[in-house]
Image (cartoon, rainbow, N blue to C red; front, side, top):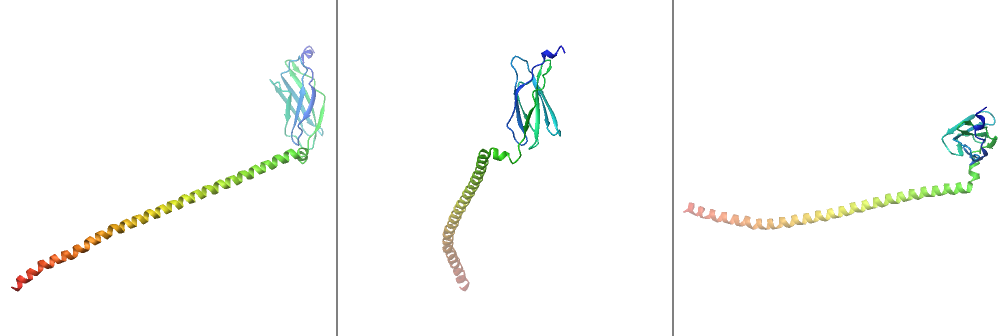
Length: 198
């Protein structure tokens, strides 16, 4: 009983915002002049199927996000302030109901529709851009290969022409050598034959 006056007062202006199918945000105010080092939130379904107690200290936050909520369900929350010498009395009970999964789109249908359409358009633009890049790269490679083949054919033709030109003079030089050699041999042989006959 002696420590009771040092406990902080209950939070005020407890409100629930950003309602969705599976989450919501709870916010509150703390009266000035009181040392508050944390908060505690009691969350329960109105049908009594689930109850959760959230407690956080060493924080100056005045809001908390509630996750893993059931869609289209009624909830009741109460918030307590945690001081140096204990916790405050629970705030007034605040009732809220989560949205249906299908209600989430109509509530922000214009904004979310624009976002999804923009996202799809961006994805399509990315896909077409990637396809264009791939096609351009393939065309570049085809052009490089065609140029290489053309250069290779030109080099091959030049080599074959050079080889023909090299072989022609050698054959021209060799043809007169052979008859001249043959003539020389015949000249050498003819006097020997003459000597035998004499």
